[in-house]
Image 1 (cartoon, rainbow, N blue to C red):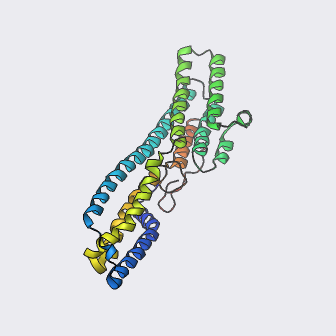
Image 2: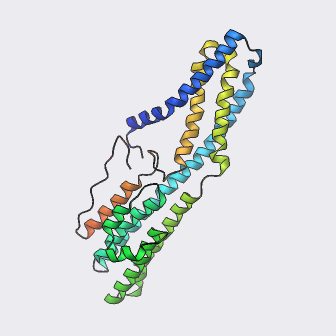
Image 3: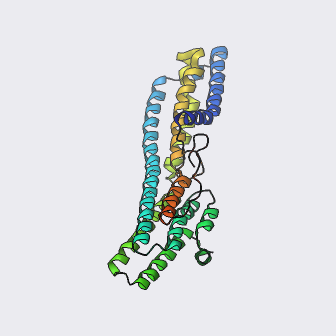
Length: 291
């Protein structure tokens, strides 16, 4: 996730410069055809294009709101994972006598979750934190985050039975695992359910078509200035489309995705410090991007 506004602006400009040059080249071709060769078929009324542009802007606004809703829901669910993980660790320490393997397994859980959701490999962190016997039990599981939750549930039950803990307290701890499973299910739903094709493909096709037609309708009014005005307007629509495309995939390996590695390391730090252990090094922000 981009956290430095100045560097973020540089990233956005770098990602858009190629599109801007392409639009400028096409606008220049249109101007040359109209001004030097007087192509009469280019004399298209500007009103229809203006109406189409207004409708397209509204449509892309609705699409971008839907994309941001996916991004924000993903962040909200990760916040629930953070809170429930901390609560679980606190209850293990205060009620179950601080069983280190359970706390370390919970610290490994967000790393396994980000690996399952995104395009990164967090297995080194999972193997570093999980007890060898627990790692062996979940080896081969298709859904390793869920495997960790299952093993945590078994461990909590064993410890509650051994200590003779009241069923209400046991249920309170187990409820944290249920809440984590619910949050994980929500994250998996976002990951496996992309935006409908009407929202993911159609806006880009319409924006590209609009950028092709736009200079043809404005050249008779703007003349030689067409590459400047038309390119900037076209770039606005392309950037709107790219914004929605970036936000609709909150778990991708891109500067615009959620900082899952940082959130997982934050959870790990809080849990390991509760049992007096040293967490891994903090995730560094590089070039204004928080991974």
